[in-house]
Structure formats: C-alpha cells, structure tokens
Length: 266
DNA sequence: AGCAGCCTGTCA
DNA sequence: TGACAGGCTGCT
Image 1 (cartoon, chains in turn cyan, yellow, orange):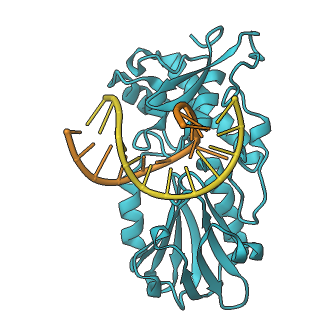
Image 2 (cartoon, rainbow, N blue to C red):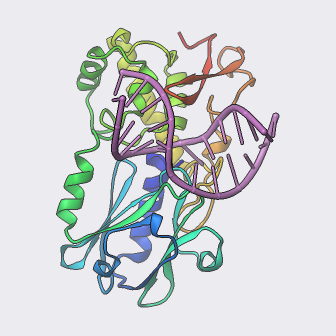
Image 3 (cartoon, rainbow, N blue to C red):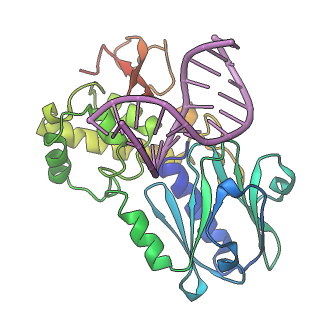
C-alpha cells in the first residue's frame, strides 16, 4: 500500500492540520496496532511531522515521538466518521476537538509511542537507505554492481532506497525499459541513471496525483488519490503496452506480483 | 538471500 | 475455494 508518495501526502496534510494540537485521551481498540506506552502521548503537543521512507515520524513536546507505519492497509485520518468505522484500531483525541484515527483492516500497520524522538529517528533511519532524491547516480550504480539479485528485488529493498514499493518499482522499471528479472550487476551506467530518474519521475507523478488508491489507501482527510488511473504497468495484466503495443504480462519476483512488457523491457 | 508469517477482505 | 493484495520481520 502506501509507498513514499502516499506517506508523503499524508505527512504534508497532517503537518498543515495538526501541528500545535495537543493529544488528549487515547483509546486503543486493538492492541495489535499499538506499541509502547500510550500514556507517553497524552498531554503532548504535536510539534513536527516527518517521514523516513514509508515511516511517519511525529515529533512531540518534551522530546517524545510517535511512529506510524501504514504497511498494507493502514490509514491515518482526521475525518470523524472514522470514530464509528469497523476497522478503526486507535483513536487519539485532540484537546481542541476532533481526533486522529488509525484505521487498518489487515492490522499489519501500527502506531508506536516513544519517550525519545531522537531514539525513534535513529532506530528507523538505521533500517533504511536514502530517498530516491538523496542518492547519486554513482552511488546507486555502485550498489547495483555489487549484487546478483534481480533488479526489482533491489528496488524493493528499503536499505537500498527508502520508500519504493511494488507499484512504483514496477512502473519505474517499465519507464526505464528495463526487465525486472535482470541481475542488478548487469545494469549499465546509462541504464542505472535512467532507472533512478524514472523512479523519481513516477513517484513525482504519484505525489502530484495525491497517491495511488487502487485498493485501500486514503489520505489524511480520508480522500482517494488518482495515481491508480495512471498506472503504466502495475496491475495491468493483459493490457496493451502504450509504448510498443505489446501485451503486459504478470510474473512473480520475490513472491510479489510483477508486471512487465516483454516487447520493450529488455 | 529467500521465504513463511502476520491478518482480513475481495475477486475469479 | 483458492489466489492475491500497496510491507516488513524474523527465521532458516
């Protein structure tokens, strides 16, 4: 679900709407979706809303922190209709009115309370590499050269690039004309450069579209994005490739659905 | 490095 | 009924 563009969309909206608000009572409806001591959050003000890869990292007063990961089906919303929705797992009241709702059907995602924002950031940063905009062509190529894993597997590895998920990995590989099954070490300098540029391009379009709501993603206001109408290959089994007229095929790489046009992804 | 597992819902 | 779903973790 939420990949970098979706999480960044939520981050920007949340920053705009609730910075300065104080968190009141917290209701944990399903303990699977909450980790740590919820008392840490109570009475704390929301000071900043950051993002590291697909992790949302909220800075609170007195140096505390709140980590949110949406995983596959999570939503972090302010829309009060979520108070009575079936899969709302955590309700965090805001003292001035309203609440933050964590909603998640599959319960893979979570909200986690941290005494120390510093520690939270350190721990999360240790799990991921740079954003696609933070890495140079040269460093990216260097990583690819060192492994024989399939290029698509590498794109999904959060230690290599933070924030790339299945949708944007598939679409970026198509845009770059690279077959997802190829060994990363065989990607040439020009191709690596084009691939990195393609990742930035598709994620840029995703962000400008408010994210992809193919399935369950919703933004901070509970609204859908539009990138699902712009998928290049993701999920388009049997559709015609707009570049070469070939047929888009579904294969599996690393247990994940993978879409490829064999006509123009070589 | 690769793969099951986490959990619930939808679609073929 | 079985396959599959935007992700990560922990185990082999």
